Image 1 (cartoon, rainbow, N blue to C red):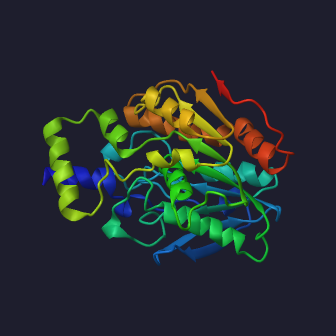
Image 2 (cartoon, rainbow, N blue to C red; image 1 turned 60 degrees about the vertical axis):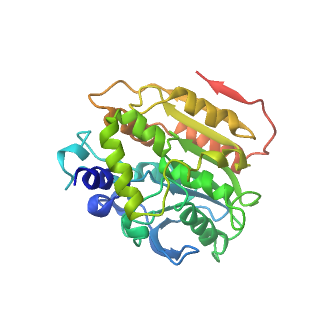
Length: 313
């Protein structure tokens, strides 16, 4: 029983990732869209029109989140680590104000998108199909088919994007439409568990439940080996006070990125809980557009002149 309850908290979203917002709340015109992943899973999102030659595709974090963001409403006390919602449409709002068309969508098992694998998330490898489907939706669109694309990839969203570059047959590596990526707080399943400091006997029960109910090995089926396949300029953003931070892991991800890159360390004041300190970075990106817009503008609009690799303190 305890293994099932904990596993469902760690790897299943269920009803805990509802939509709670829409672009009209920001005065944005939008279109409800849907598209299909390669395995037949239907994904749903919002297309917020801007310039036809440049598009941002935003992928949200997993578990208890949707394309709208994270809401405390309806969650039990353990899943309400902060006193307010995290509104991902704030990014869409400033992207649109800068002229970008924005596609935000729900991953499988989240929001209004279809269920897959009995509701289990994979922290990136399966969700990579959703990132690829979102890119394909834009590149085959009659209006935006020739646009340059930037990927705004948050937590599991960045794991999914990295996995999407590494897929051998239909992956994003070498796709000329993808110009750059912003990767927010890289985290894989083993480091998520490590950050929780879960006692070994409880972790064993979680592992046993997952093994009995899925064909997923969360320790080996990871996005991490595919970092070397990311062939676009990437800005990594990481909160130093993230409750799940393993600094060596983040630096390792950054070091393995093969192309132009920057690592932006932010330091959001500490909060009460480990999860609140992680979510703080997702609030930060909604109210600090300057480095994010500068990265996208540099590679989507500018001449792409090579510059030295840097790590910002």
